Structures are given as structure tokens and as C-alpha cells.
Image (cartoon, rainbow, N blue to C red; front, side, top):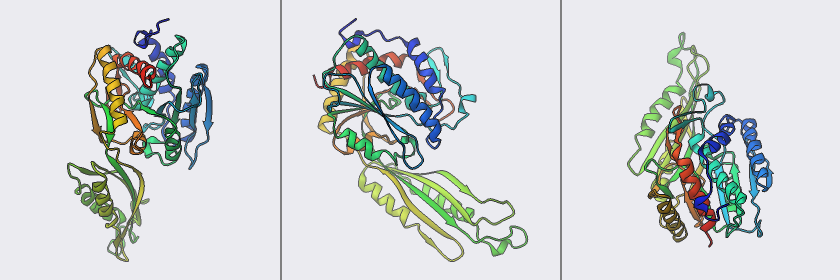
Length: 380
């Protein structure tokens, strides 16, 4: 077997065959049983690599996490942490409209791009390294979590505690549209809103009621109007009313804000909290939810990792740009701690979080070679 990680025998068809059961095991965040079925698969695949695997029970009604210590003479010591999530935004049944399928150079499937594809590729790199008898300079730990898509409310402390033990953090989230890795991320805050109105019969006594739905609709326009190029506001979820013949007494919504600086985020948070209030007939309540801290671009450890990754990419034959990006990931947490973190080094594709989610098949081998060389060169 080759000793050069760039010459390991990666097989795209083999990877797609291994990925298929991962994609066909749907794992939406809020379905803990479904996420745990996915974790069963992951636990099995890690065990077949000879890893020491731990199942960490979920909290807050969410799924379990899986932590694996890969075989190594210094197994268990801090070294490289492979960090990813196994939950997706796609509800059970999405496979009926977005089945796992390959069409030429493209492969489709729910969660394939974000981020089961990247997770699988990096595990396949570890598989090939072990099969070749290559000893990585540093021991490797793998941590897969169940709740990234909702802001990581139940596993942030686990991620941060584990990451602090390691020198390098690899996060195989999907590559940016231009193929970039991510070396910084914007700050993100979530909010839960409730409008409370005055109920009445929608026909006999319409004028006696005050609609919570109407109040929320007015606030939606106001909130999204706060958006600037540097701080955005988006209302992504809204639920209200129960009977069409009743003036609604409650309406709930969820808001996401993303800012390029922590100061801008805090200003945005205050604008949202200032919306609290109303009168006896209709009121709005705003509660701050989970937050992802700013990960500042340019940290020395991360930039040194990027230099290594760019050198590897050049040997493979592709460019590896890098940027600070919107869209949160668990890299926000490790990067904000000042830990050397390289994010969005997973597969290339388009349509994440949509019914056209797909990857470029060629990126499987490309990113597997990148992964293998990173495991073998970091800490050398």
C-alpha cells in the first residue's frame, strides 16, 4: 500500500455506495429517533475502523452524539478533532421527492451536501490511511453531533470541551460556492417571538378582536426592514391561529440575524428586544435564543492550517481560496475560542437546504485526498 496519502486508492463508486445508506437514513434535527438511527450507522462504520466509540446521550429531546477515538499509539491524547453534524433540515419523507441518485457528474440527496458528504469523505480518508498502515503524526478524534441545524443548543458545551483538548479542528462543512474554505464566520443570533391578541368571533364580533397574526405580519415587515449589507434579519418560521372563524389570539415566529461584527450583532439584538411591548389588546414578546459567536478571520493557528491545506490542494491540482463567511457552523464555537479551525473543507455542490441539494461527484476524490493529507501532515 502507498505511504503517500495523495496516492491512496480512493474510489468514487465505492464512496457513493457507502454514502447511500447515510443519505437514505433521513435525520431531521427535531426527530431524535431518526437522528439516532443515523448515529447507529455512524457508530457501526467507526467501529469497523477499529475506533473506540462512545455514544453520548442526547439532551432536551434531541438526538445522541458519537465520539470516536481512532487507533493510534497515543490514542486519547489531544491532536486533530474531526467535527461534524449528522442532523439535516429535511423532514422525513423528503426522499420521495429528492431521492439519492447519480446523474452523470452530479449526485442528489437530502443532507448529501450539508454535511453527510463531507463527513463521509473524511471518514473514508481515515479508513484508507488505516488500511495502508500509515501512522498520522497526531492522534485523531471524531465527534458527530445531532443539532447543528438549530444552532447547537444541546451540544455546544460538549463541542467546546472536546475542542479545547486538540491542536487542530477540521470541519468538513460544504465548500463555499467558489470552492473556498472558511477561516472566519459571522456572528449569529436567533429569536423567538410571540404575538398575543384579543380573540373574538371572526364574523359576529370581528371588531371586538385584535389579531395576533395581523400584529405579527406588521412586525415581519419591520424586522426584515432592519437588514443592511452588514447585518441581516430573516423571519424563517411563523405559526398562528387555530380556527378560521376566530380572530387569532397567538402567533409565533422565529427570526435569524447574522452580523459581520459582534458589535453589529449586539446592536441588532437590542433592536429586536426593543420590539417588546404593546397594549392590553395586542402585545409582542421577543425572547433571545441561541447565539453563535463571531469567529474573527486571521487567527495565526488557522492561517497556518490554511497554508498546509493550500499546499496540498496545489499538489492535487486545484486552488483553495479562503474567506470569512455568513451561515453559522460549529466552527463558530471553536474559532471563537481561538483554536486553529479550518471549516468548509468538505464536498462541493449546490442547493443545500433545498429540494435540489446535490454534490459534484468529482469533489469526493478531491476532498478525500485533501483530508488524507491533512491528517498525515498536520503536526508533522
